Amino acid sequence: MKNKILSILLGLLVCTNLFAQEETAGVKEKDKPVRFAWESGMLIDQQTSQISTAKTLEMVIQHKFGSIDNGSSDLWGIYAPAGNIRLGLNYVVANNVQIGWGISRRNMYNDFNAKWTILEQTRKNKVPVFVTVYANAAIDGMDRDDLELYNYDMPYARSRFNLKSRMSYFAELIIGRKVTNALSVQGAVSFSHANFVPQWQDHDRVGLHFNGRLKVSPQGAIIFNFDAPLQIDDLSEQNPGWTSENTPGWDGPYHPEPNLSFGYEVSTSTHAFQIYMGNSQAMLLQDMMINNYNGIDFDNFAIGFTITRLWSF
Image 1 (cartoon, rainbow, N blue to C red):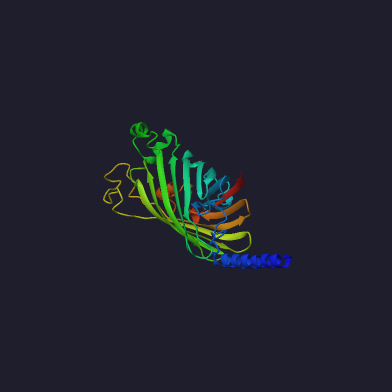
Image 2 (cartoon, rainbow, N blue to C red):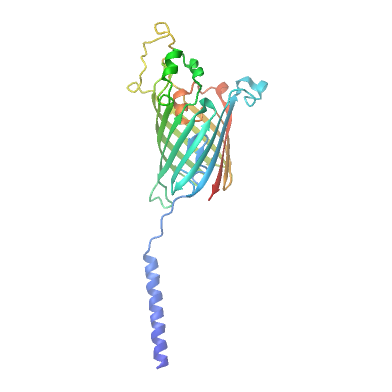
């Protein structure tokens, strides 16, 4: 009797094991998101699809020195009085959703932003690209006495320069791909709007962006950004026939210049340090897309750096 019972139990055990193996073989391996397409949520001035795990706080420090055109007299812009700084904090409130705040030296902009990675590229290419949306709203903290820089009638401009006039906005759709273990690229289309601009500028601007990162060592990578404001006549408020001769104070028509930045990134699991050169002094993307007066010329380039630091809670 004991032998019969042992034979039955052994048979049941073998059958159960075979059934479990068949069940496991029938389950498809989960297609997980790719890892380390970017080492940071920022690439110089631009956003990336990278969002850390939920309950992560990211600190951002951005600094741009003056242009290098004076050479060694001001240490190629490092000791120049012109420059820009932005300090920011970003918090991941949920999986792939981040909110943030920052303040810039230029015009004392306060910006409030949000980023959402809608789709993540997967390792088996079930999803071949990542898709991210980013938007911000900024408040211009410029002193009213500085409005003379805009060639406006001062009493009129001061009376209109309220909170609504100080607002500007930026939104973009980012699509990218980790092409190889070393190369990641992304492109974006953006829309910028500023409520208050000089009379020779447009309130609205559509832009295109192209950014990339090429790893050259386990912790190092070559990085670049290219940001191009588009000239769309149907969107423009400018009259090309207007000149300073028949319109006092007119200094246009004006179209912003594209921005080119390139540099090197060093990263760890919690830090990313990027040093670069670029021809725009702006930190905020809408400021760059609307107000960049510096063309892509050697003398207009300035040294800058971006540092990010992560804390998990």
